[in-house]
Image (cartoon, rainbow, N blue to C red):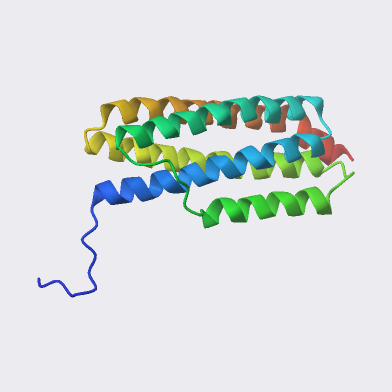
Length: 170
């Protein structure tokens, strides 16, 4: 099959780098969102979860910078439309449900949308890093993936044990 002049010759290395830039942008955006979500949250447990995740997210950014070093690239972000959209939804919830018993349930849903996006990206990046033989990157990405899954589980527990119950009771 002949290739056309417009066909791209980009391979998995380039796709890995582009996706790494995407999640780097996303993590930086999340760092900016978390204090706003913590401030908006009514539940002390939810505030604490957002504040704890902010510290973890700072570590995730640092790990991503290490992955950039592994592939000998400068750590730069590439606008991630998905995280921008999720952030806009979160801002909308904070505005539309301010003072409502359902606010925390909405914040939790937005936070879990972020977590699920991150889990997807980190899982993909870890797999590609493995296929590319980037052992150090695999370890860094796997550690973050595990933390993202733990955060998602904590948020689910918080939703099921208190936040959704409070929203429903109102």
